[in-house]
Length: 157
Image (cartoon, rainbow, N blue to C red; front, side, top):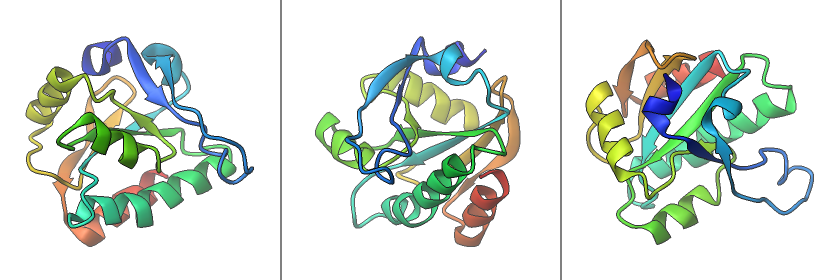
C-alpha cells in the first residue's frame, strides 16, 4: 500500500548526524524497508520559502521534535515524510538539506499531486496528514492551524 503512495524509493537522512557532528548524507531507500518498523506516517506538505509559514513550522517545531524522538529511539514509531511544495529542485535541495526525516523525491511530482488530491491538500502549507502504516488516514488533514499542527506533531512524535 505504501509503494502505491510513495513509489519504490523514498529519500532519507540520518537524523542523528547533526547531533553526533557527522556529515549528513541523503540516500534513496526502498519504501517498504524504510517504513518496516513504523506505526504512523506523518506527511508534511510545505514549501521552503522563508516568507511562508511552512518553513518556520518545519524548522522550529517538526524537525526538533523528530530529532528528539530519534534520540529516544523513536518510541512512537512515527516517520515524517516531507512532501515538497517548492517550485524547483534547487529550492527543494536547500530546504530538505536542513531536515532530518524522509522525503518524497522532488522529481516525483505526479505522486506529490496524487497525495495532495487524495488527502485534500492545497497551497504551500504547512499541512500535516497523519496516516497508519497502511496509508489510511488516522487524523484529518490540517492546514496551518498553528496550535493544532503543534498538537499533532507532539502527539505522534
